[in-house]
Image 1 (tube, one colour):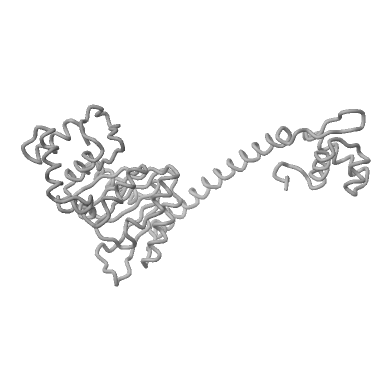
Image 2 (cartoon, helix red, strand yellow):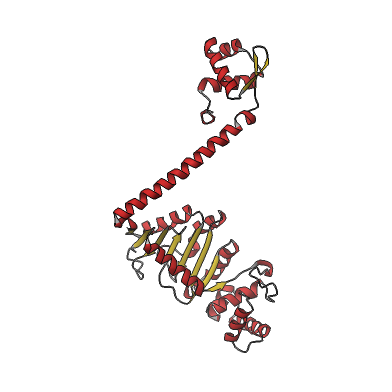
Length: 326
C-alpha cells in the first residue's frame, strides 16, 4: 500500500509494527514479522536511511511520525507524477500534430449521426478546462439548451462560457429563464439577430459544428470535429467577430453593476429587460417568458425611456450604450 512512498513490502510491515508497538529491537521485528534476524536488520537499516525510524536507546528503535516521515515523500512523488503527466500530454500533442501534418484527414473528423454528435457535445464540455465558446441558434439538432447539464457542471469547475444566442432562440418557451440561470452561474451571454452556424469551441483546441445546417428531425445530422489547424483559427476568429458585434445580456443580482457603470439607475430586473429589448426580443415574447402581460412589459419599457430621457426605443438603446448600462 505504501509502495508509492518508496517502501518495500518488508519495510512497510516493519514500519507498521513499529507504529503499533511504539518501539522494538531487531529480535522483536524478526519474531513478529516471521523473518530472519538478517532480513529484519536489513529492513530496519532501510527505514533508518529513509527517516522512518530512529534509535531511542541502544539497539531499540521507534517510528518517526507518518506525516513527517512519509508526507514529504508523497508530495515529491506526486510532483514527479504531475511532471510526467505534463510530459505525456506534451508528447501526445506533438504526436497528434505530426499526424495532422502527415495526414490531413485527421484535421477533421466527420460525425455521421445524432448520437455521435451528442456524445461529442458531452465530451468537449466534460473535458474543457478553461473556456467554451458557443453559437446557439434557434431550434435544436441534438438537444434543447435546457438539457445541457454539462454546461452547469463545467461552470461549477470554473470553465469560462461565452455564449452567443440567436434572437429567435430567446423567443422559444423557457429560454429566457434558462439563459438567466446560466448567467447567474457565471455564463457570459450575448445576442445577435442571426448566427451563421451552430458551433462549439472548447479550449481553443477543438471545434464542433454541423455540416448540414437544416437537417430535419427525421434526418441524421452530419457534423465535423475540427482540431488544431488554420481552419480552427478561422472558426475562432469568426466567434470573436460575432462576440464583438453581439449585444450583452445582463442579469445581475441585487442590482449590482460591475462593468464600470456604478451610477446605473436600473435594478436587476430592469437591466435584464433592457438587455432583452436591445437584443431585439419582441415585447410579446418577453411578456411570455417573464410571465407578464404585454401591457406590463410596455409600461416598464416606457419607464426605462423616461429614466433615459428618450422619446423612442432607438434613443433608449443609444442612451444605454452611451451610459454603459449594458
